[in-house]
Image: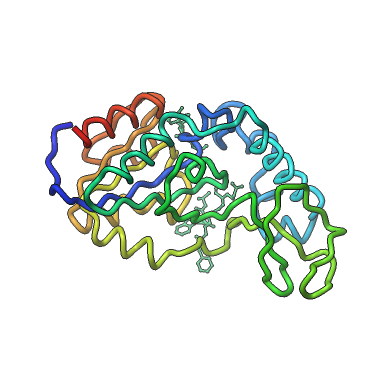
Length: 239
Ligand code: BV8
């Protein structure tokens, strides 16, 4: 790593589907990716849910069932980020686009799920939150408002505002190091975070299997599987 950061540097880390790939969860845009079986507009928009709730529920029920399989576990990249948070003298914030719970299960505490969580749901009518580890369906009735048909996965769909954006932009404005791990740079506003970090003179590095759409604007770009690049990067930081 040919850069220097303050001893108590503040670090913001954006993760995408690529960090969970080696845990066995599919990414979106690679060959055989999640979107390959579906058009985004058909499964990840409020309009899709209004038009065909059963299909949208099945898309997320399939992914929830997959995540809860015993063989799906945090991988060394998730564990390295949790170790960094534990041992680093400055602030470490993980902002994930992922809806899985692998960062939590690896031990990361300071975490924002900007696109929601597949193990959570809410009622469209009264907004009450529900933990959910089973299939959701259009026939479900909300325990709070007793309405039927409004229970939906707690996921940020296209056209919906990602969660906790103010906190994220505050962290980007004050960070010394911005890492982007396992994301293709297709989806905004997440894909614009590197530009925000650069505006505030942070050092920026991308760790990805292959260069993302905005790889060229990072100071440093490491290519390879996350279980190698993230572990190596964290070990160098903690040395
Ligand atoms: C919004 C749902 C505004 C959950 C998802 C400009 C500014 C603002 C918005 C827009 C804009 N331009 C366009 C928009 C609209 C839109 C958008 O970005 N569209 C794109 C397609 C052009 N954005 C939105 O609608 C967002 N909302 O902006 O609201 C607003 C303003 C006012 C009022 C209301 C609203 C909402 C975006 C969230 C959408 N939800 N998913 C789900 O189903 O999971 S996005 C979806 O893509 C996933 O959540 C995922 O997180 C996200 C990004 O995908 P990646 O994580 O990058 O995954 P991908 O497969 O693409 O890439 C994986 C990468 O990993 C690859 O590069 C691969 O090489 C690498 N990799 C693979 N294996 C490994 C690896 N790397 C390392 N190791 C490995 N082993």
